[in-house]
Image 1 (cartoon, rainbow, N blue to C red):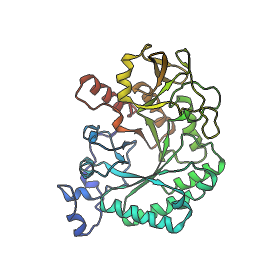
Image 2: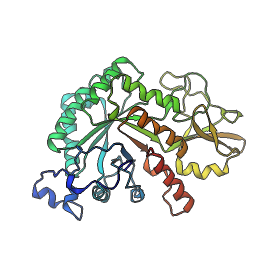
Image 3: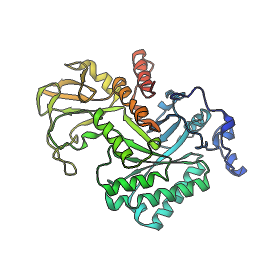
Length: 365
């Protein structure tokens, strides 16, 4: 685990007091593996792995991971394997306006999620929001997070609560204040440090998904507003965007079709999200080879289909390693990748090497 030698001893596990009927339903070969792991133990750097489903988890770098966030189908085998490696498993859940504005809906939602998580022997919940956090929406956030934390902790001692926020806290002072207030009741706040080009306010050209300087500004914006840096988890992308050029001027000057988004005159809406594993298959077919942009501190390449040029902007071990420096610079709580299935876990030697490099890039020296 990034900077931590060996596995956490079973001696420090918090033994969750459960009934014999609860333990006898444990899907694991060893019933103790159904006891949620204690959140009182914190690593110098937490490494969250977002898991979207499938069986690739069998090939994850388990010596580095501290927490799995699963948004796919519940996998009993994954739970048992993770707990055997002293890795927590939390489930991702979506919050809508009903859960925020209607107390009865909120209470029922928490009860249902709590029951599902407790009976599946999971370690907590990671919340994401269905709508953009505007002032009216965010005003209810602190009380919701507090209620979730209180009820989960009471029912599952040591359970972990986290939620996700945009890459920068610049929507309004009110929203930022609400996020900071809510963070006091959560264990972690995940900052989505990518998709910066969702909104393009000046020119309309293909650019980096997670430009270095903007990501640094985004993290800094939350800390300046009062969010405890040790609660911040930096989410880096294991994917990129394939941009079709309506006019190709030169490498790095791929003009896009103007597709407005949330007030911005241009966006990346016309691009295709592409996993790192597919990017590595496409790169050898490019007409440019890998190009490094010194301003955005990110790689890209150009390829051509018939008469149409495309630019692919992505992150690789070099660019991700540079972004992990933010962990020490800002004293962050950890890092995560979106998501762990986006690399190649095949037996191919070259693919295996590239996948190992991506995992290693998450751990700062």
